[in-house]
Image 1 (cartoon, rainbow, N blue to C red):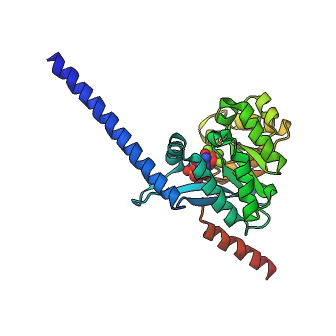
Image 2: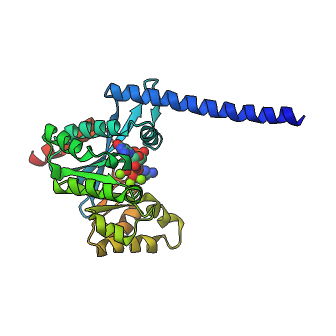
Image 3: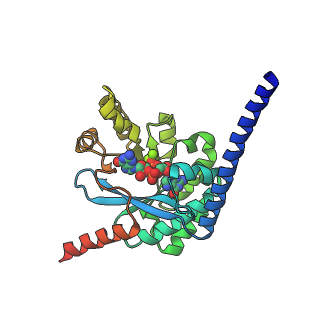
Length: 278
Ligand code: C2E
Ligand code: MG
Ligand code: MG
Ligand code: MG
């Protein structure tokens, strides 16, 4: 009967909705709990000079092991943190932990990822500067990575925050360039110190016949604007060679290193330095 059928369908949708909300609420609760316990972890992925292969920086990447033991990826918990108003707390926790760790890695930069929502917080710039001052971390060694989303949703507020950081010596990088819609005007206006070419353009090298031409054109555009370029997601020697030839001066990807713990990076870093002086 049509009536029963209709009811059946309704019930199904309601069930699905309920489950979804319950899962969301549960995860939000767990994330809140982790944040309260200062439990967000940070992994560090090296950035290397295209010419020498030497480490010139690290990117801090948030990691979350929930109290029930499950590890979630940032592609899941960052949107959750944004939705539930926890992103400011999460972002500052990542910053605090990573400046404390990177303080010991002399001579290399520290990049952190910042959500568009964080830039909208009027206290953001001051919070960042206070945190690095407290840690004794040099502002010139910090690089903030923003995505194109920032430029579209609230350009004036984003511009204010970016200017404030730049005035203090912090570098600003445009992350995932080539995955969205940033116009040439926007690239000029914001005065980015660096652009990171999105991994999709690197993947296109293997998959699309015109992948190389698109990559070259993208890097040429950045070069024309005098903005240095990092290629992310480099997994093969072949890709590394192609991006070097196109004019990238900095590379990042599994070919060089996966994201590692602070302890692993410290061990590597001090090992290398002590070998040098020995
Ligand atoms: P992203 O900033 O573009 O970071 C690069 C992502 O690519 C990282 O994933 C990294 O582990 C991964 N990756 C690096 N090299 C390779 C490679 O050679 N091959 C492949 N397949 N992947 C590679 P992850 O750590 O899962 O982070 C995903 C995204 O989550 C980041 O993309 C960033 O947008 C966001 N995110 C991570 N940590 C934070 C954070 O603390 N705050 C904010 N707001 N966002 C964050
Ligand atoms: Mg990034
Ligand atoms: Mg990126
Ligand atoms: Mg990305």
